[in-house]
Image 1 (cartoon, rainbow, N blue to C red):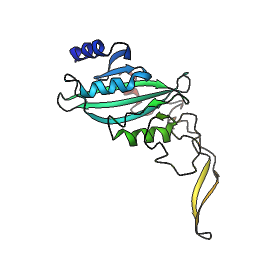
Image 2 (cartoon, rainbow, N blue to C red):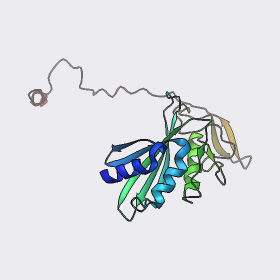
Image 3 (cartoon, one colour):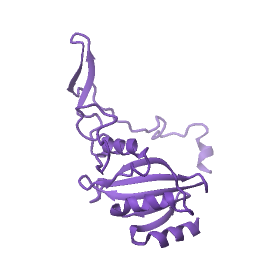
Length: 197
């Protein structure tokens, strides 16, 4: 894999910011503007042959200026290797769609758009995939409220689906996770064994 890393760095040059070795896999940190070039190279090059797109994942880091990572997981069946390609973007700058290179990217990109609001440029059909038609917000962003904005239920009297403001009849419970035996003034039988360990 070290030879492959050197090969990718030599061939792609400025299209790649860095190549790291993380979690037993190679991660190519690519420039957003060069994504199509990088993915095409990894798929078609004889030494790479990463011809299977396994997944596209969004990751949200709200404290960063470019808050989203878009991570592409590729598999080379010929060489039995996996590689991760990562780019950074924000809410307004689109990422180049790779659906023409890997047709299954169509659904993965729609999922990232629906869950995070990541925009994919030149996508054939970029619309929501998992949420309802009138859904507001992006549920996998870290700043999305845990309870959402509305709740949905079927109203038997109206014979229709009804959207209502979230109603929490019970307050959130706060758990301290402290054992009921912690803080007692006496030693329980068996606790003395833990002292010397």
